[in-house]
Structures are given as C-alpha cells and as structure tokens.
Length: 241
Image 1 (tube, rainbow, N blue to C red):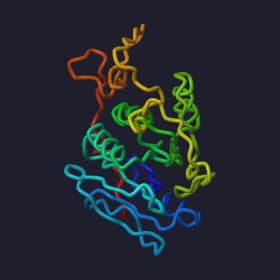
Image 2: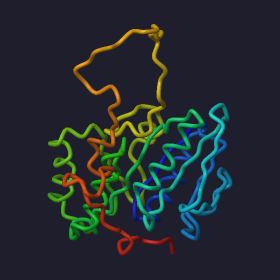
Image 3: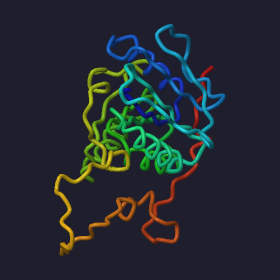
C-alpha cells in the first residue's frame, strides 16, 4: 500500500490536486482518500473511493502488501502533532512508511498571518514536498522569500508551485518514493544486523537511547523552553463549495 499524507487549509486546492494526481497516473489504482468527518474534500471521481474517519479515535490498519494507494488528509481542526504521532505509530505497526508527506500552502492567507505561518512551520518540518498554491493575490517577493527562508535553514523538502486551480507541475515527483523530510517519526525501526554477545558492555560517547522527540521543537514537552507553539489554523480553512 502506497500511503501519502496531506496537510493544508485550502481544501479545494487539495481536492483538485489529488484528483489530478489520480487521473494522471495509472500506477496508483486502486485509490482510497481518507477524509476527516464532514470535510467533504474530494469531488466525484470514479477512480477512487472516499472514506470518512474520526481524527480523535481513528486506528489506522493497512496491509503493506496490498496494491493501490491511499491519501490521508490530516484534519486542520484537530491537534496536528497528536494526529501525526498516532498515524506514525499505526503505520509503523503495519510496517508501512509514507511514500510522501505533503503540505499545501495558501500563499494569499499566510502572507498576512503569522498565526497561519506558525502552523505551516510545523507542517513543513514533517514534509517531503511543499506545494505553494493560491498565489493570485499574493506578492511574488513574498512567495520567493517564503521558500527561501526554509532553504536557508537547510530544510531538505522540495518546494513546488501549484498552477491554475491546484494543478502540480510535476506529478511524478510527488508520487515517486523518496524521503526528503527532516523528521524520523515515520521511519520503520530497523533491527540491528549485529548479534548480541552475552556479557558484552558497549561504551559509547553518544546516547544509544536517543529519541527524536528530544530535538523536535514541535514534540518537545510543553514545559521545555525550546518547545514551539503550534497555532490553531481553523479560521483560515477554505472549505469546498
């Protein structure tokens, strides 16, 4: 099963992009799109099946050997990190790593909002590809600077422009496996190839019990001064007509 995780607030663009990806590739079929309850994200398309889920209680169980693809839309109205951690834990138990994690950026709205920018900062930290959309009324200098600020921070994710009504310029880049995200949250733990030797004590200058959450600013304990606050983006959601 090929799993794609999608984050964003401009739901019509997300819907049109997924619809385009499905129609432009025969390798995806059969396709499922999992949508948070009552978002009504994806329009009619006989090439995919749409399934609703409750982000508060969902348990993701999938067959790693199953053919086909699955797009999981993260609910922008529910705690981002709780959803990602639950999804990562469930997929790991199924021995599945996401093919790609995508963030859709509403350029017009984020240009005037540090609050939405704060939420997108978190999304982009976990993303392989960032899709810049809704650019008609956003200034070109802002769009360029938005991308460059993450490049200066050495974010490995790929930035792409959405054309027209949410159409990606390179569908193949989105659908092809290739991890570019900072986070290791979705990595499947690999068993060590080195056999254990009874009685052997291994000395190390590093912490063998290292947890990524110790350096991830968005998953740090709230009492930690380095913890980053993630704003609620609900007021910026654009719902389908």
